[in-house]
Structure formats: structure tokens, C-alpha cells
Image 1 (cartoon, helix red, strand yellow):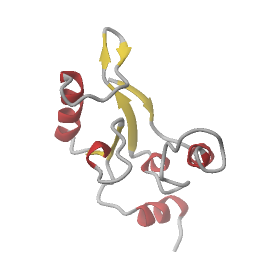
Image 2: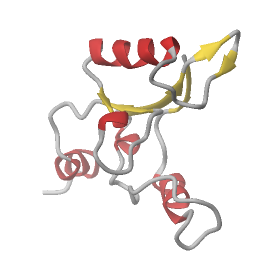
Image 3: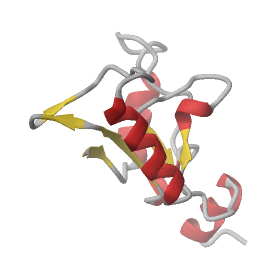
Length: 111
């Protein structure tokens, strides 16, 4: 697996969120800053590798992708490929049972 994104700053998330909205390009996320588990260090974006090259195109019949999803399941990670809206085949996360609001409070020491 090639893990190409882990923790993001709020600024990085804002730049991604702007794409397709106020910046050129297609929408790549529905998460504004602090609405993504990436800001809390609880998400990764990754793709399988074949012969040292990333396999960017998701194909459920591709055994490499099947193994990636299976291993994520074994690690009890939530795979965004199962989301009903804005599916992200490359995204896995572990919320630790937290909500985004509670995670924000923990990080920012908000009462």
C-alpha cells in the first residue's frame, strides 16, 4: 500500500475544500477544516501498489483493492468506499468512537 496522506493541517483541508467551490478543479472533499478526521490524525488516504506503482483506479474485481479493503476491515477502520454519498475509495479512518465535535473539543481544549 502507498499511504499518501495522513494528518492534514486546517489550512491544507481548507485548500482541498475550496476545490470545485472557490478554486479551480473538481470537488475532492465535502469536509471543511476540522470536519475531516485527517486533522485529528485518525485518517489515511492510500492505494494498493502493483510492481511498485500505485493503482489509482478502484476496481472491485481487482484483487489488490479487495485485499486493501479486507485489511482495513481487519484493522476495524471505516472505509469511505462504503459511504452512501461522496464515496472515497482511497480513504480509511478510525473515529475511536468520537464525534467530530468531541474530537475538536479534545484538540482545542474547548469547554
